[in-house]
Length: 110
Image (spheres, rainbow, N blue to C red):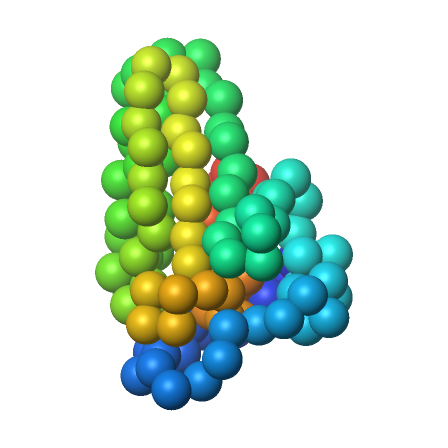
């Protein structure tokens, strides 16, 4: 995961195919707890002791997403955050989705 977290997301301009299953496997193997849904998107749930902790995490994700220019879907509820990410321009997964996932996981280690 550390290797993915050191990379930066690359803006997708479209016109390239989304990653196939054979390309996804070595990337997902570098992440912990993320799930690939129908080779289309990544998702992960995080648990927190209260709403404020979950909200702080969401705000930190927002900062990373802005820095990387790659924005996940974020679902916030009391004590829970669910992240879903995929590359909208290609309607599927790109390496940037895995990079962003690794960077989000790094936030839980700080």
